[in-house]
Length: 99
Image (cartoon, rainbow, N blue to C red; front, top):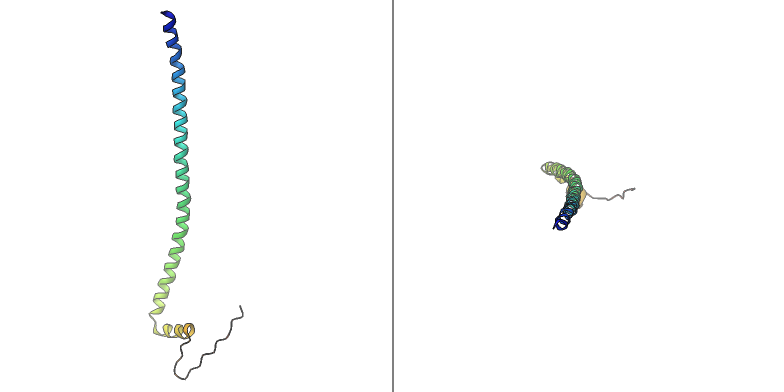
């Protein structure tokens, strides 16, 4: 009986060692998984910040256009330039750009 008792005693540290390695491996993979998720969210955040900045610039441009379009002189000039509308007795000549 003494031999059987010694075998059980030797198996305990091996099981504990295997269990410890299993926990370490599981923890390492879990940390790596969360780290990759955090990194991808960080990259997405950077892209969204750039998109937000461009959208704010576009918003400012559109607000400027709205303010300009409330001026009747600007609207008349814009319509003549863009759509070739003319006043009575006025001729429109399009001159090509040098660009």
